[in-house]
Length: 106
Image: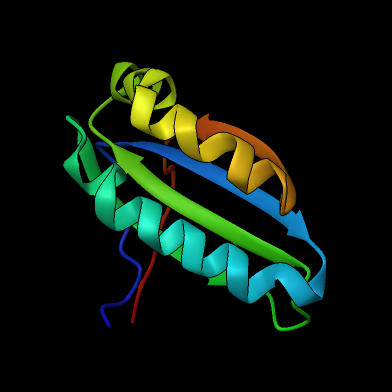
């Protein structure tokens, strides 16, 4: 597995999903499936990473896109829309779109 690397020239979408700890593994499997079958095929997609909280109560998705229009395209894609009810059945979520303003790595 590669390290999380964020590009400053991309639009970054961060989703924080809150779930019951008993549902975290099911949620992660659904998100992996969605990333492999839908997200990775969309125009403007750069990368996606899943971060699972140790207590099982959250999953954070950090994804990067060519620009804000690519994010909007993803959010309105019919294949993506088909996943939303399944995700909402397992978790509540908040989203924010921004740009990386500072990053540092070893």
